[in-house]
Image (cartoon, rainbow, N blue to C red):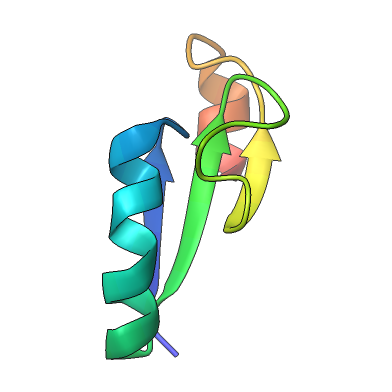
Length: 57
């Protein structure tokens, strides 16, 4: 299954979820906080300015 990583867990990431499901794509989201709009995707919480966290994502 292909995977798409999204940096930012807001409304736009949430709006991508139905299309990703329809295309058989796993959506992974890197969000700044728990409970983001895209919380139903596989979500990793971290700081966007921490390059080590982004690299692991």
